[in-house]
Length: 355
Image (tube, rainbow, N blue to C red; front, side, top):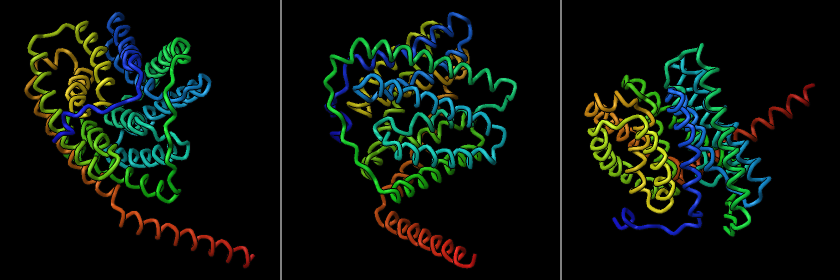
């Protein structure tokens, strides 16, 4: 229970949340100014790539950020391309999740936020209505968001990098077999979560896989269960606060400013206390996913649906986390992979001998 209220120590610089807020908020402000809020929302999703600035060397930082920006664009594109089929969508998301998790570990990009935003964007896009005539336009908005983010990151780095003395994090390398097993588990659980969401005919099915993914970000089985409890509790409080805000019929400009400020608060809290951060994450994600008119007109219906979605996703995430950190399952699967590798080598040798 203490972990619900305990604030953890962090090496994150105080100005990092402000930059994150600008990266998400500026596209929203531009979208509001040009009377195209939906374009602003897509650009703000790309702004989340600012969270991948993890090196203390300018060149390495910018190369890593641009690579992650490309990865987020690829994630969004894959999601849009497979949004045409509710049967293929879960399989495509599972295979993509496997590839993302495996590739990030191979590239040693294991520090938070890790695979979360790549799979999140793919989940969001794959659950959107299939509109082939708008695919290029939507990708373009995301691309513009990544370009803006890279510009903000460059200015931010030039102003602050020399003053930063944050120690390099130690990266614990995993064996190739462990990486494969974890990637398979992530892929299967994401397939299951989206399949469940689509089978329930939910209006916004991406809430279930995203909630599942958020819970599975825990560092141990116990941590996964804690995150699930924190997410459900924080969501309940966040929904209540969102209901109060929505009852005041906020204008689009107030919504845009609120999203910017909420992103700053979330980035400040998420590394210090996840339970409290989830309260503001809930408000932020609802503001981003629901239109202003729909939020004020269908308030009770939206909040009840979101609560059910997040509860289901958290339960699936808890199951996935238990599987992910099950030592016996890991050992058994690793043994089977090694046996399969040995058999493949023997078969290849036999073919060469016959030739």
